Image (cartoon, rainbow, N blue to C red; front, side, top):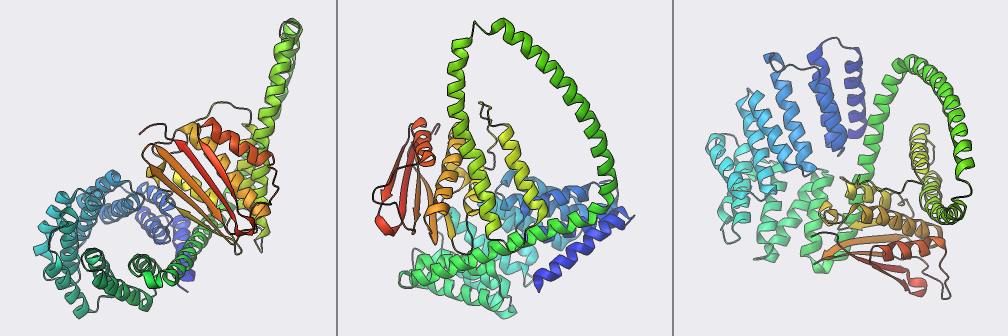
Length: 512
């Protein structure tokens, strides 16, 4: 029901954007749409929507300041969740600059302090919390939040700091005020605080956090509580982990569904306006393209005929050798890019009840662009967000029959992996997952990334049928071996009968 309400809200805000003449109303609608996207976990789309909001605001106009302040605060929260902490701090400062409501300033300062805490700049975070603590004493929601966050930060800065009284005082206020959201935070802080010194108490607070999260139907808090329970309760670890995994998958599915729905609403609203203009533009482009292709083809053919006539005898032997090498390379690239790409699309279609035209066209267009560039030798480092690329690649093979769990795929793992290594590893991981999907019938797949000293390790494991006893590698797995060898790495395949497949990959980091 909540998701349906969000869909309707997004639809009507988008309708205001397209129909209203009031610039502030349009900016505020974009702000609300961005908040809905943020709550759905789509941080990049939320940022893009906020940028649209800023286009309708003027810093000189005081009427626009509340919306400007809200926009910058939400930009800060998006950046904080994406771990762009310096950007987050800059946006929180701008939110404070345009704010004219004192109670909101406390919220912005609390967010800023949380960012310093995430950066492990604890002294700066503590200074902010101490500056606002006294001003919030009359506010029974803000005061325990600031008090608990201050105590937690002091403890993070100094593991010997005794934060017990402050954390329990904040908890008592929240219990008295029946502040369930605040109770979740207090139970989380207390569980972390006691995790080493008093594990039983840490487990108790984790259980209470889980109970409150269940009561309030808060999936994100449930996931956090289950994560703590998995670590703190060895006896029930398997049951907690199963619940954690199921809930985590459900949250991700809900986020994906919401993101797709928001994109579809915006697309359908704008499509009718753009059709006529797009048709005219396409016709003009087609005419220009046709003439251009004809002229270019004629010039190219003439040039090639003259060039080949003069050079044929001189480079005959070299050309024959180059053709053979090119065929081998192109064959390998066609297998990696086109064949595996088509298989991924087929796999996605196989598990969908309905086929949506636009996403399918987008996937085919990406495959088309990659196939056009198949002969390019230079590798361009376009992996600024590589951990997300790897996550999307691996989880694209998940469906109702196969769960894919990715562990350790953090941006820090890839910071010292070079562009060439990333390029080759992406093809290797794709080949392994395609091979799994074709042959293993696995129900669970785990891919674990880790670094030790100057080496990186990738461990793949599934519970499928395993390799046959007399297995012969095809082109795909042979290519996998050769690619890892080209990185001065090693790869080993575990042949364990019907107990699944285990693949170990290791390679040296380019820089450290």
